[in-house]
Length: 524
Image: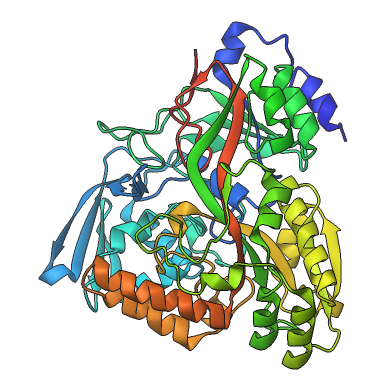
């Protein structure tokens, strides 16, 4: 099998400095945060798969830069019966990559498949009496009660993605990746060019019909693909990725390491951008297996948490790039709360943590941390987690593997000794942290929750109360109570909020906010 360097140097990869100007205008070379281990954005919550998903699939609604919902695949919708009947009308001319038209029944099957995996989708389907496709261009929801968040659910930009795919694929088991990547998005996935651990390739879908009018922003507005081809080059070594950018072998590095940012800023051919898009890093507990099936042990560990240690390890000393003192919701957003944040302040007393763990019943059970060695940010924070647990007197060790292996292992609900796990570290993006409905990590409905499977009837009841609140002030009051309850149940530990830094060739223009987006971007 060819090495990554051989692929970068090969003419077939179109990745050498010998590119002609015409080739440069047609090709965009991107270094993602990790390899694309899973190609189905419904069956995994991996961000790299979500980025891939928005290239090849489309959604009925989109989200703009101000987090407002906009029609995307639909022309619009009409509501009747006091908000209990919704009719959505698809835009004309939508086609899948296999040439078939997008029909209402494709959307219905796709939404059912998505809702079987997604918490927000599950809420919508629980409120739905009937979901049907009266015609090829219409989709109808008959609801048990009004659900004003319906467009927001169908336009969510966090995992799982409400991707529209052909009915024949959407009817397959939602727990297993579909065998073909066929969407109606602006790019086609070139499955025959995929080289695991090295390269992923896409071609512009010439049959894509962008929205007319409006402004391209996040996943909303007209999606215009200026590049004929996009290649993802998998370069897990950060220094290698930056060197490739400096030498013109790639055009864009999604997550450059903070310690190399000064070097890149001195290069006039590279633009380093601190985006307005942020995420909260989290340490997710396995609530099914010892020791973290015991809430008292989870609460004891909270006393060891130093958010600044995690943020510094992953993002450096520059505090303009990250924040500590972070709770459940996005800092600065309407639902952000101060409830319980005192637990994160002040010196960490590890002797007290050890006493609290003993009082909680910790008996030396192994704590296995899933550590992705080819994902530098998560690797750095996993190493801090190992140090934190060790200093707290816990029997901790790391399972060091590639990201794909970590993604597979975190599916296991077995004990550590039988292939399970205790904790892993991930990030939740800003769009999913604005309220408790789309919040992936906050859902606590047991077996149907995100990996870790927390079960908290109190948190679930508060989420439903938030959804029924009549106005923002009432929602805010419930959000404060949610965060207070969060510190009791601790479905995860919040590790801090960080702003996405990206680096790209200075001749690129019009990068969108949010996830890496390959429409709108162009070369001058």
